[in-house]
Length: 113
Ligand SMILES: [Zn+2]
Image 1: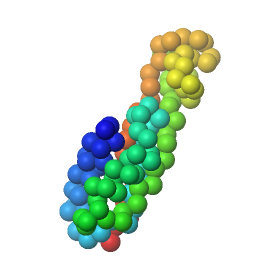
Image 2: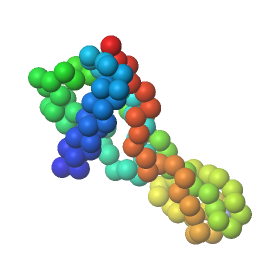
Image 3: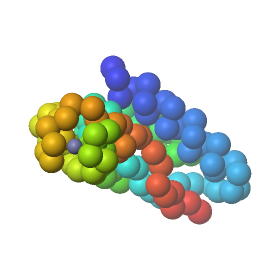
Image 4: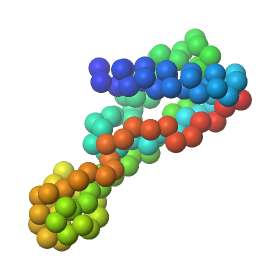
């Protein structure tokens, strides 16, 4: 399952951060999830809960925000939201588009004790 390996790498990052800050427990972790990352928040939450159960991370909450897909046009240089996965510039109809947001998976904030 896609989300299982993602939950695993999240755990690695979180544990690393805990070590750095001498944190004993994590209350919540805020994540930005790009629309294009194909992550299902419910599945990720589920995997995370399963993997943290019985560990020092048990009870940590994942707060996830979905980041819409955005791109810039290489022709007219404008920025816009990419809707319905239509990789075409709404201004000049060019298909030369750079994706600038929406693929990421990042930890924005962690609340620790
Ligand atoms: Zn354009």
